[in-house]
Length: 239
View (cartoon, rainbow, N blue to C red):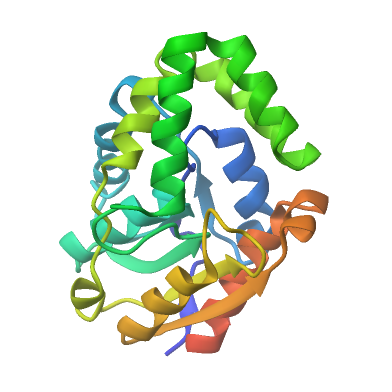
């Protein structure tokens, strides 16, 4: 069955510490090409998860179903919402999923907890400098901007994300809508294995891969590859 996103409100949620500017650039070009109505709400760092869920609920108050997705924690919240509202979503677009089920020792959760601790102890400027020294330049530039925009509630957002329980493999088995997933082959914080877990469990899902250099050169590759994965499940209609 073709996935028709023309005129469909598609809500995309940012990753931890990231923002609506990045998630828009990651998804909007590909989604506009298929006629979707792109909505990228800004994160509310003091109530990150609750804010994301409110945005999804608000978008779904119309009579027509929506598509949902996002990056990292945004993808996990979107997938969980689609599972909880099986009649309200038509597709899930999941970029760089970070873990399945409990966060436990997931690299992304550990990194978020560590960053939150440093931000509270040392402040924004020293912690940002440390992040810049250990990140690819494109990512450092993105996070320098988005971290400043979410300060001083940024540590709270990171703690909320680090404790979020993503859908389990058993829950993904109940996902009734198609899901396109994209993972990076060289991202230790968002392991490829997690993307494989999600698509292996969901009945109608497919995975495409990218590299971090490709994302740095053009964030739009994330949205394009998510749609390509949806195409692998069933053609994405352009009409």
